[in-house]
Amino acid sequence: MLLIVSALFSNPIDNSFITKFEYGAMLYENPRGVGCIKCHEKGNKPVVIAKYKEIDKKTKKLVEKKIIAPAINNVSFEVFLDKLRSDKTESKVMPTYFMTNEELKSLYYYIKNIK
Ligand code: HEC
Image (tube, rainbow, N blue to C red; front, side, top):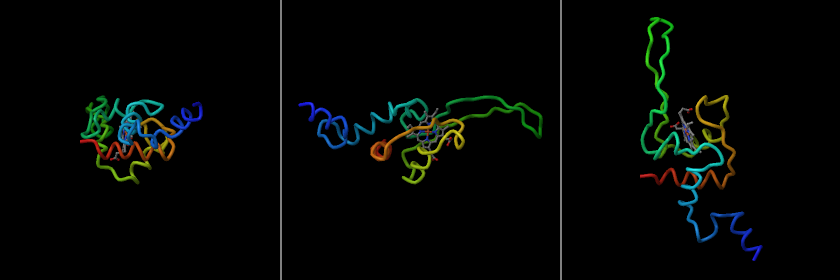
C-alpha cells in the first residue's frame, strides 16, 4: 500500500486520477511560489499588473508607466523555458521558479491549451 501511494505522488502525470492538463493547471495556480495566475490571470491576454509615474529624463515631465504581464498562451517552448529558467537578474518582475523538466512540460501543455 505504501508503495502504491508513494508511486502516485512521485509521478503524478503517469497516474490516471489526474490528467496532464489538470496537473498543468495545478502548477499554474500553485507552482511552489507565486502563482502564475496572480499576474497572468487566465494567460490569454495582457494584464496590467502595476501603474506608476516616472520623470522622463529628457522632458522632465511626469509620465505614466505600466507593467504588463503579457499573454502567454502562444509562446514557443523556447521562450517559455528561457523565461521559466531565468532568475531575478533577467526579469525584475517575474519571480524565479525551480521546476523539474516534467513540471515544465505539464505547465507548458496547460498554457498552450488555454482558450
Ligand atoms: C509577479 C508577476 C508575475 C508572475 C507571478 C508570473 N509572471 Fe510571467 N511575466 C510577468 C511579466 C511582468 C512578464 C513580462 C516582463 C518580463 O519578461 O519580465 C512576464 C513574462 C512571462 C513570459 C514571457 C512571455 C513572452 O511573450 O515573452 C512567460 C512565458 C511567462 N511570463 C510565464 C509565466 C508562468 C508560467 C508563471 C508561473 C510559473 C509566471 N509567468 C508568473 C509577470 C509575472
